[in-house]
Image (cartoon, rainbow, N blue to C red; front, side, top):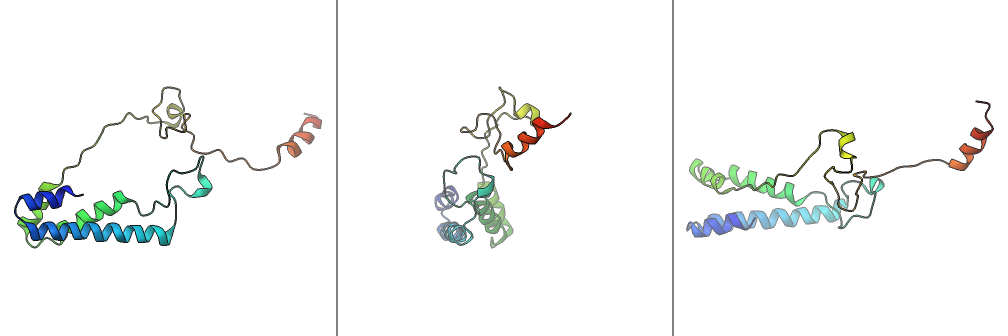
Length: 142
């Protein structure tokens, strides 16, 4: 996020750098306020297989950053300024191994979604009284 304002400063566009920096700072501040007000985890607490490592995560920092970049391109003063801003965006993806079926995701050699969850099962939800069901089932004729 800091890369774009720095590149603008190096391009001697200090006012544009200040605008972009203020947009990032303002958006991230509003996102943090939103997280405190919404106080919602992703996934919801009821679906957790293990305790999350952080607090509320909605809205995410990734979504906030993408929104700021989109707004920065839209509010650019000229088409050339928008083009210049678009050229400054450098997305760096790290290819990760993947699987395309649920069965393959459960395999022993499948890539892990969560390091703390070696079987890739995010939650197990059991409801009811097993003993109360087993007792009449053992006495059943079938």
